[in-house]
Amino acid sequence: MSEEFEPRIIAFCCQYCAYSAADMAGSMRLQYPCNVEIVLIPCTGRFDVILALKAFESGADGVYVAGCLEGNCHFLDGNIRAKKRVAYLRKELESIGVEPDRLAMYNLSASQGPRFAEIVKEFSDIVTGLGPSPMRKKLAA
Amino acid sequence: MIIAERKPVDEIKGFIEGKKKVLVVGCRGCVTVCNAGGTKEVGILASLLRLDAQKDGRDLTVDEHTLERQCDPEYIDELVELVEKKYDAILSMACSVGPQFLARRYPKEKIYPSLNTCFIGGALAHGIWAEHCQACGNCIIHNFGGMCPISRCSKSLLNGPCGGSAGGVCEISKEVECIWHLIATKVMEENRLDEFAPIQPIKDWSSSRDGGPRKIVREELVK
Ligand code: SF4
Ligand code: SF4
Image (cartoon, rainbow over all chains, first blue to last red; front, side, top):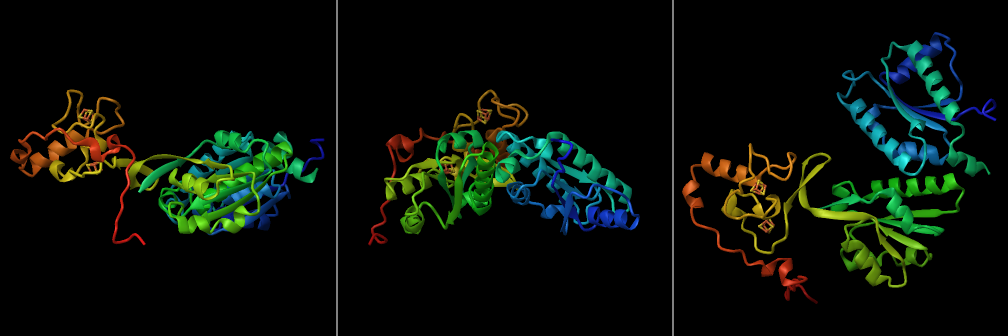
């Protein structure tokens, strides 16, 4: 089953870093799994736990937040706040029996197109390993 | 304000076990400000409960609604139409006054407290709250440099620190500041130590909880 399983991943990407890195990965014609849907956010400080929860409710298998390198946030500490929110929600997911690794935080700079492609692959592999989201399986059934 | 904290999801899951239709009710008062039971926290709890049910393949509807306040009957009345939709459980996310007001107004409903009401306090910084008052009913903080030794001293001492005060820290924990250290430091800095000489008489606790449940009636306001 897991051979056929293609995870649905939602990535909340900051416009200054991760989103630009995604753009660069595109213009560099880098290959990465196509099952990631990118949501542009002005800064990862805009990331709210409810956004990830809604993504899971709608059937996402994994969600990640990608922002600037620590210390390089355009709005100073948006990425640090996002990191704390991600950590908080991972605990909440665990408390309802959902694998916390379905949610992650990544940091990269705008010039790291290749790293962007790598992250997509890395996270996609983790989620593929976890299998379909237990929430989604039941939705489809 | 009243500082509260959400109960662990597990405990709340226990409240709604076997139930199919649940209403989560938030409050725009204190618990919104202390990020425990406002619209946002209602959304998070409702979503977690839905995900938990989805995961187990259980059929569960979770509706969300936030009232202006849950400690005033006129706002509790606003829930009439929703309550008519017949929920198996109503989870109140107000301080514990809210679920009591809901239970009195809607006696047939199963109402559950989703928050633990912790203390009367204030925000030291965003995300950090500390106790500052114990509602003793007869405020005397002016005698203590504007600090409340009743709620902020672990032993509610009124005549100076105990022998456990060390380096500004209370003997009960390194995390707890000794309020008597702060009071004494402030008074000494202001050269007002002599004002401190008189012994505080034994406090009359009858205005506090020791006098039984309290009530205030303001005749000029009562209709
Ligand atoms: S003296 Fe009493 S009313 Fe004043 S802050 Fe302390 S507990 Fe509250
Ligand atoms: S160490 Fe200070 S705060 Fe703690 S009980 Fe003694 S006087 Fe009160």
